[in-house]
Structure formats: structure tokens, C-alpha cells
Length: 300
Image (tube, rainbow, N blue to C red; front, side, top):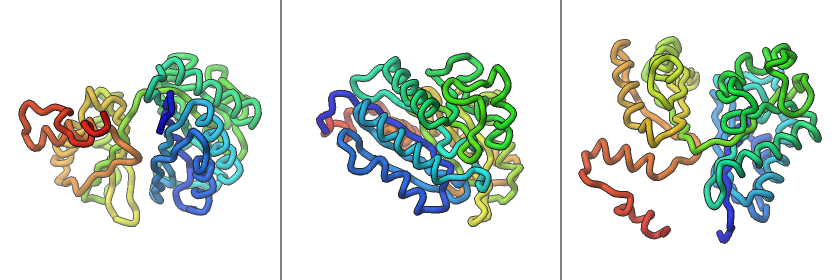
């Protein structure tokens, strides 16, 4: 890969059950000059697919718009059910600066894509995170509150007019949040209980908005097929709130309900440093450095 500039994008699509639709959407990232599809994963309980793709700025913008257009055509949220909150067929499109690209450039990319989606595809766009046009739009949870169903009325309120596109929810595809942010870790912890209220309460206790860990967003999710529940999270700055701290706090909170952790999962890709930090903690490794990681030295 000899690209001068590299940007990452992690679009989330509100389809995780119809894999034919997923493949059609993901095809927008295949075989494109200046774009590389790194990963995509679909979850039936969440009914959601998370794609991780990198590319040169212009090529990546075009591929993201193509994928969004396919999602708008293929996904009808009037028929969508899932554990994960959603407001759009393509629900969120974050751009993350990786190489020779600063946050300002990533913000400009998000605005350029948002403008195309809004003006050419008539798909209402909210700018969020670093791209937000107002403080109350920075937090994705606040933007998405009300979800697809509630957005029909919410979008008509002056403080929630979209940044691009019509001030009217798309009848089948809803709305989308587009923005720029730093890398995050999508990390889920599974519990040996089918009681969703327990997972929900643990999520409330550990997330920042309720007085928990600073860079944690969390909620409870029911995994129907496995008859267990999950604390589903976004760790928005793993360098300041480490994965192991989150894991251990969930273990402590679960204990009060007589519940145990039975596993965890990472959705999409994760920075090597986030895992090394956790391994260092659990193994008690002293004076460890990333320079001691074989792959890190090879990639220098």
C-alpha cells in the first residue's frame, strides 16, 4: 500500500440478517482503486453490520457514498427490528484520520460526504462528534434518540433540523449521522443471564453519562439465540479508559446480581496497543514497551 494519505471509515448499516443485502452493500468497497476493505461483521441480534475500510480521501468518499446509496435502496426500516438503536439504513458514518491526514481534513471529508447524501440523495444528515455544527449534536446517542420511529417528528424541531438534506425523515431509510472522530473500540461483554434488566443496569452503572468510566458508552442487549445478555459498548478513548478496567468493573457490578462474565467480543478492528495494554495488565508484565511486539518492529 503506497498511499500518501490514509483515512479510515467505519460505516454501520442497519441490516445483519439478510446477508444477500449485506453483500450488495459491501460490494461498494471491493475492487476500487485507492480503497481497501479491511473487515465487516454482521450480527443477527443487533441486526446490524459494521464495516471497516481504509483508503485515499477522494476514493474513499466515492465508495462510501456508493455504499450509502445501496443501503438506502435496499433497507426499509419500517420492517427493521433489532437490539441496537438505529435511525437510518446507513446509521452512522465516521471518518478517522490515520496517516498524513489531520482531524480538520477528516472533518472536511465528513462534510463533503454529508452534502452529497443530503443534496443528491435527499437523505437527511446530522453532523456529529468533531464535525458537529452545535454542541448538542456531538454525542451520537443524543442525535439518535427517538430512533427511526421518533425521528419523523424530531427532525421538524428547529434544534434538530438536519445539516444537509430535507427536514423530513426519509420514509424507508430514515436519517444518518456523519462525522469525524478518533479511533474507538467496539467491545461487548457477555453475561450468563437472560435477564435483560441486569445487563441494562450494569450498562447504566459503567457508562460515563451515569457517573461511570469516562470514555465508555454502554447499554444492555439480549442475545436471543444464546439465551444470555450482553453489555454492548463503545470505548471512545482506549488510551485513557483501558479495556481491562472496563472488563473488571463489569465483573464487579455483575457480582451483586450473582452473575458472571462468560465471554467478550470485539466488533470490527482494534488497535494493537489496546490489546497489548490489557495483556500487560493481566500478565503483570513489568517495563513492557510496544517495541517488544514483533509485528510492531516488522512494520517500522
